[in-house]
Length: 453
Image 1 (cartoon, rainbow, N blue to C red):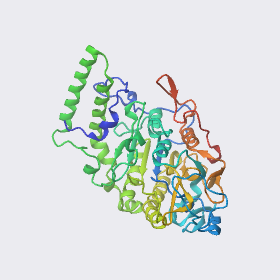
Image 2: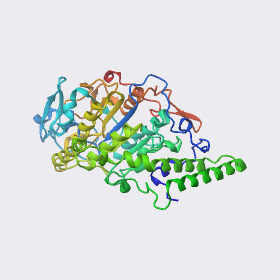
Image 3: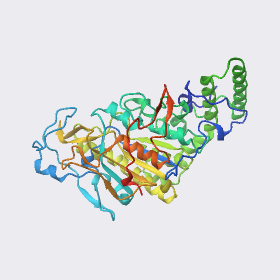
Image 4: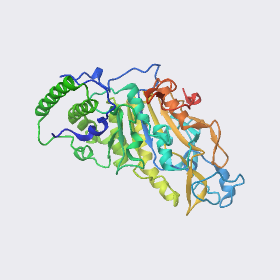
């Protein structure tokens, strides 16, 4: 029937229990209706730069000059278990400098982002569970490295809804295909299907390619509205005779959203409507364009936008790290800095949370030809925006950067902190499923109050 398919798949879920839409769908009562959090919230929306594959904290935001003393030699403290065999110490090939009034040390790889040093809260003591991509991706995105669980973005849209009835509440921009674990990274899990992330392959700039089937070539908007009215009547008859059917209700809601998205999404995703100066600020590139799209979505009421730095594992530098990390940072440094600048200029910075990092870090010892292996024992993420104490460093790894030794922050703690900033107590924000209450942090997590403003 020509409805936009972009919103269809996320909405199809047998667990969706909303009532059938009325002749004039009321945004205030739908599954994505805006809701107030139970506590005072510092932020309203989140954008997550996911540096897929595990960027090296030792070459970006956690300098370790002691590695130079042992270059090519075994570290005196020995090795923690790594996924692959590694050799001697590998000093960073990149120069670190202090930035801003805070004097935050940042690598030359992120020199543009470093201009916002006084707005960054850098956590250098992150810890995950396993040195493998698949479980670490699920842990960072869904709070569990083994079980199928709802993603962070799904929990947030479940709790807060969306502020725009014509767009999904949770959008995932990932160029050139799907990452490892694919849609599981933004799944709704046992939450209603309306809260699953809507995936967009952001390698394209033309709206009709970016959003497949966003416009119908067979029916006008008026004709589609009459089709929807017929579907509503048929659904009402079905419900009267057999009782409510959540699968049909989810399908109809997806049609409703897709119908409305034909105009709203075409506008939100079209960066050509931005002035040339703004497109230049972000950079005329895939990641520049998708980050500019993210800002357009955020200001239109989308709650959670995740920006993947490529499919596969582009930051997974097991060899030739210097060239690979330099290339990757060049692709993402300007867009990150542009978004922070843009949010500040538009008055959105103080109620937006920006999160940047990967699923784990890298080893201080060398692998292959000047590469680094996976390291879940100590790595770095940073936050910026509303409720965050900028220009701060929390925690530390050991002198070589192998493991977190001071103020460890597990991924569960990061999630607890994120929910706190959005107005939720992570221990009370639960969903009843299979006879027990589930939460994003399972039975773990503490709020990292030291980075809060």
